[in-house]
Length: 287
Image (cartoon, rainbow, N blue to C red; front, side, top):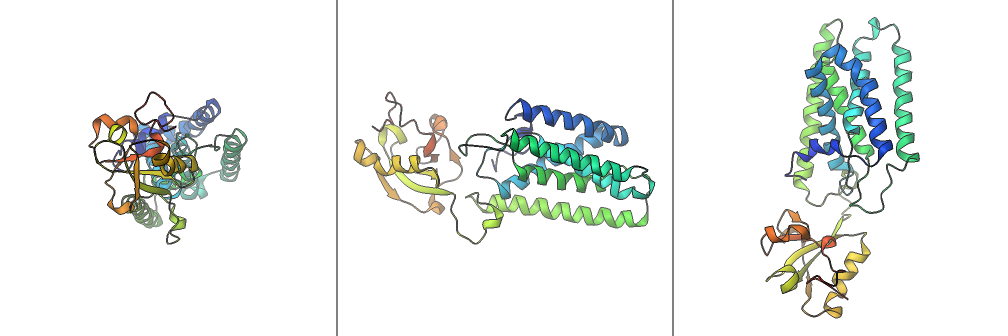
């Protein structure tokens, strides 16, 4: 994900289910049409996708152990844009308070849909879900972009200061998120910094027919006890398997799925949870 930067933007095209995509489309229409009418298509497109990317960045520092999908980052950017417009045009808006109430109501409805509709539920880290972190990141990105290029009916001196502050905040937050994702290969959330809580369990594994002619770094989620048990019992249950402990810092980056095996080098790191060790027709079969 770190080096596949297009995924910071393209994840918006997939959703969990009909209720997820349905409400996101509704929010895009209800909130997006007024923004496009006020600011034009180009600004609307830019601000919406800033929200999508902002959601991805916030997800990267807060919720990166889950697989996240949906355009909620862009939808919540629209919320941020509307709140920015209210703040900048408060004296000139007749129904500002009513608009705030409607925006809060839509946020509540969306969150009820996520939790009551089980959009946020996931049984495994590989199962796609929605993310509150992406919502928050999208909202902040929308608020910042709304202050920078959103609709402002009467530009005053204080608006220059607001734009400067919004620019500094936006750049600093984006830079922090990118640096965090690049510096910490093990994607634990920022609120666990310094707690030394690992996300993955690492081992080196050798099986000539399954993993190649050399020891290969593999890893499982620490919470995936089935995957860990398979690695630990492989030398006992099947011939040709050997394991030994390894420090994650010596493992090559990035990590690949077993499906990518024909296209990667023999010593590249692999997610062991993707190895077909339950398939009796596979060279990796473990009884």
